[in-house]
Length: 204
Image (cartoon, rainbow, N blue to C red; front, side):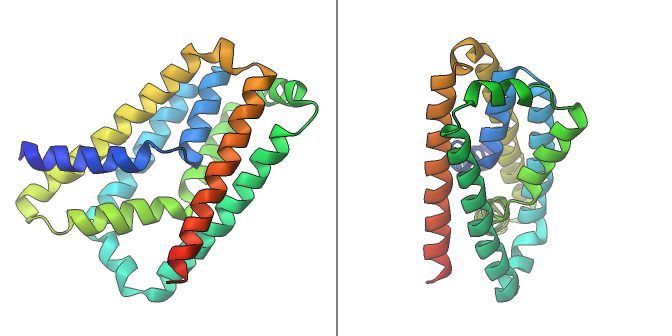
């Protein structure tokens, strides 16, 4: 049982650790020290729902429909290109310091809605939870499948809280305009790299 738990934990950690839209959002809220634990909690709950749905049936649904898989793939490409473009625009904005200050004034509800959009409107998350975790999790016998799911969701929960707290701790250094530019450039590059990878896989 514990070996299956570790497999789920390791696989989920391997997919969630690279920089992605969810991680970027949590990190930015941590840097601003604005509702970062709330955002981490909502991201973790969303991942729990998506991972469990993928492992306990959603994967089969996605694999049965080539049209749905194509929509998820190319929707992910479009979303990531748009997200990356926004990061590049923020990086090369001359008033990056003023933009950062104005963003601090976001309401709690706006932050929650933005987080839900970043998570649930990002098709890449469905590829991770339904295609990868769902496909592997469904191969386990029903009596141990729950342990695989438990390991996968545990990695997600631990990571989001660690990321939010670490970003808040490093906030005095990461809020500097130069650091913000570097972070946004890295985010843009990563988003576009993931988009290219998704597009390449979609053309295979």
